[in-house]
Image 1: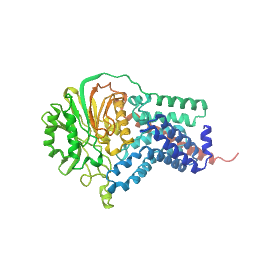
Image 2: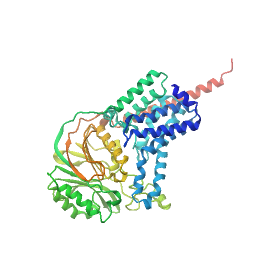
Image 3: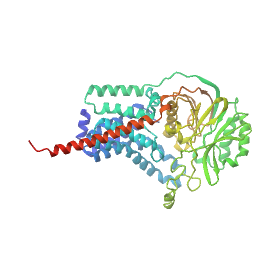
Length: 504
């Protein structure tokens, strides 16, 4: 154990918990709007120090929970923004949502430290347990992997490792390095590990421009604030703004409008579709719109041909709990909590799953609506490898600071992981073209109305992660957890034998 871990172990319990909260919060500086990647080492190294300072499983659980609470509460502070759109109705939920979400996500880190302490308190056990906790967070209860520690690597050369290892392999590597820094018995190894980690995380990823296709895509960004988006007096302003941007300048090969770009249901929108097709002058248009099927409502996108006819439709399948549908809707209806799911009693209905859109000579695209880009396994779940990824989103819900920037960072992660370009149309920004290395080649600033014509990069070669997905890391973590359990059982048997031996 390092001298730091020894000293922290001598602190009172409240001091260790306070340290966990502070260093957890420090980790938030690794994400937008600050984007200082090396700051992610603060909570990760602290986890190993606090594990060695905790004498019991209960103490480790409390310190892990405090570490996660500090990290998630500050990193996800933007989560209060959606509740302020209709502050009179839902504003009171904002602080409860932030605290409860941070406590829930912090519980995964608590379980990691608690399990590692139970398994004997070894650093390798925490490497396995913490990686397992982040895997679990990405999948359980529909998942919420936002602010995963590897997200902090996106601007540095280390972020390119996502193409090989994916987010969960990178998580395992991060915590292994943090363990070397935090509890290595050698100052030399600890110091070298710290310097190397900071250098690799901070060193910018200056990847050379790759080949491009001959195709141009127009990204339309109307900049409709969420408070005004559905205002009957403002609707014509935003719709006409998008039509004008579509009709301006040279004709592109494809036009993208953002999520829920039209305020109508698809079955009632043919007159608008006709006007949009005329403005597009023969170019296909993909736009977000709500649609109804029987008694169900869907958050969808449609592709319009030169005649304004819908030729392809995609329904969002990974919905936002409490935002687009109400889990356990019967319970929340009874206590008169409606969340933000505005359409029908239970919100939207989930679509059938990932599918591809066919753009002819341009190739196929995997459509992603807003939140779906957060999940690496969603993107990897395409029926076959597309030529590019396509995200339509309405980040007006996420406020005007960190939320939209963090969402863009996750889109960049998915591009690196798959080795594919990502084209992104966002209502209030940040609309962008992202190359297969996660670099933004063109964009529109946040909170700006306008459009930009971008050249579509050529797809890169299939990455290792695009071939393997999360399977290797799931198997490795499971094997490690089994090893921890067996070691614990063996230690218990050994202790029992020692206690049974008579004194010499």
